Image (cartoon, rainbow, N blue to C red; front, side, top):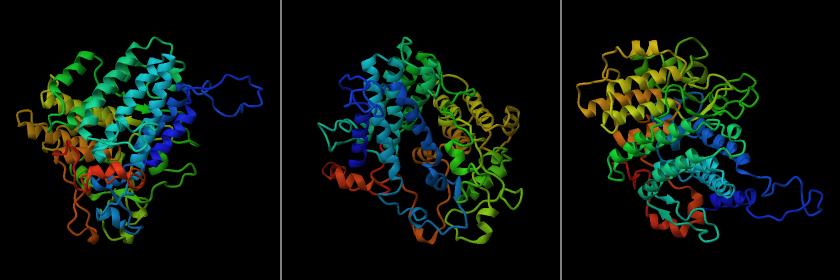
Length: 492
């Protein structure tokens, strides 16, 4: 707990809410040190929105490999911990700690914004808090929340049930959206410091609605929410969902020298050298996409250096020259086709597949086949392909492509999730991991590393070591935690 507790202390120092008024030349005032009067929400929001987006750049690399998108180059030794699924308390520990840091920052932004009556910033802070805490629950289940940000009263915060946290997040998004919609224009610099939507209330509503729909669909096998009633509220709000080229993405000023973080992590460095020669196309996704003549393959992978062909590897394979970095395909540009491309928080593509699933389940009215095909077209255009190419692709009779309008609900959901799987390749592997756990439709192959034995892909992450070191008295109440239990509450 010390790591994210210290982060919150740092937030308090930066966003200090009380200070004495002094003249600029007062010898007791350091003009280079931020004070309460100089650090306002407009100076902190852009940095945290960038931080949220950057999580999608490389945080989920391991999940891209587990889920059959990527594999490892034969130029490197096997990662025995990862490929055997014997994860440790250090595996992806930064996700836990960074998410709490971000939430703490948005809590401070929201508090300061409330004092200034800047409702737009307050709303952003609440929506982004919900986004980040949902990620924590999706990976860890029970987690500190209700007492996690009160250092004075609870330096060792208690663990809340994951389901209870989820129950607070949907109304938190509602509150955030209501604040944004009621903003009266006095939020300083919102058009420039909101690096997602430039102060566009309608687009923030689309994002809020899409985020809520994501959370609701995660829980379809539980009784956590009255999903039809919650979806009806979204419909009544009236703004719709992300789509038609509108994604929740940040553009803080990426350039060749300060590139998009995905581009910098997986494509090319500013000197032109390959940035990622470890991750390589996984034969599972590559072979299926090729068999379906899916033109998106050229966007989610890039040809090998030694030829124009796309070549993959099997996850967990022995490191051999034929599977080396130069002979295999690395991650493709996806939507990050240049250093200056925006970095996504939530894509229009994922949102449209959520709409397709909700329509197929009857939560949203409309034609499920049309919603599904709109999602596929959104995937193509998002990657720089054309709607005409998508329409040609959709003529396939393969059940992973052709929507079974007269089929069962399970058959419809299967087709939707297969296409969502292809669409999120390298883009949002955490949501693919969630779909794998909640639905079990796409079954990526297990690692062929001999160290795996009979281990299966973990159903959750382990709490980081810092929790056992600094929050031992409360984390012990969670009980024994393994990579397979207790499952996240919606994983049925």
